[in-house]
Length: 496
Image 1 (cartoon, rainbow, N blue to C red):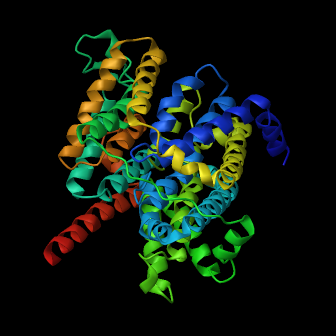
Image 2: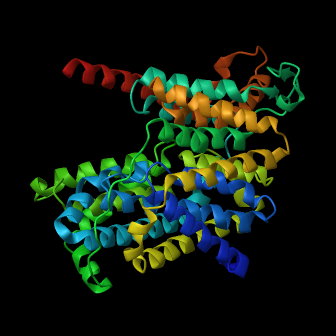
């Protein structure tokens, strides 16, 4: 309790609250506009946090994250286009409900569900994370290597599309992280005699290229068009709470929250998958499945509860194990590392105040997002009318400034453009980008612990990783996940 109060005192400062509020506003806008996501928003604003303390800097980034995940349902409800992958299932019923003249109810249900999902997951994460970190303290290099490999295979094998392509994307990320000075022996690798590459690829340049520049180039190439948004009706908060039906939909609420939290905890899954799984379960368990796809309130609630509950779930492995739960936490992990903070079990012992500051900021961001959205329902259509030519011009400038400012190297801007092209090519050839990002993030941890683990073997044999029970079980899970995904994919192809 004393640590919590100390963290609360450090968080509740004018600058932190102002940045948290601004972050939420930016996040909601990025989440609402199709094509722009919370990942893009966090990535673009990451360079602005360099001059702040870690807590103040994280207040801005966490605000963007929470606001971005929640804001995705706006375009889903009004345009029938998911603002973010986390709102795909929300489209199925929110848009039909809006077209029937109940857009205020569709938005209101999304706002309430988002708030409950975020707050629930943050509270659970705050209680569970210290327990997981204590268990992780007993891990050696063998367990951390196996954990990293398992996380990577989970992401690669469960990526959308071809399993082999998902794993190939993950290994491509591992290959990129080998550029620079190698750990332990300090040997330069793949630097081609360039000093700029001796420190490896700048993570900020990579994510800006992959998520910001690539998306802008993609949208310009396909000449993305806007749709006319629908009008907003009138509903007060009391009516929206009644429509939510806490008592009647209790089972759906608990199931969706649990699914979102669990799927968020699994590395690489996140809110993009949780909303679809929760929606599917809600439909299969509903007394009126025929209403799904036609404006079912159960479907909207299930999707938004799950995708926001995944937020708290994905932050658990990031803080306790140093493994990003999804794309956003991968960028946040990079942000913490840039500030000189290494997430993992030791973080809870060395700086518990920072950990609880993050949880408090996430809870406050959820509350601010709720208050902002519930009082701004009528402004949502205006957000969707921001001209792309102005918006993208600003984003391109911010991307170049952010990429350059991290190291004061123009070479990083070239790297950013290079990864934008790589991202476009991967997308064109059907490769998932998320495994590559997580491979790049997890690569240093995997390599370092692999080499450390081998030093304990007198013969240098890899069998030492199978002689440790936890390490062996994790590697077995990695193998099972690959085999299961390949078998499942073949069954789907045979049925087609």
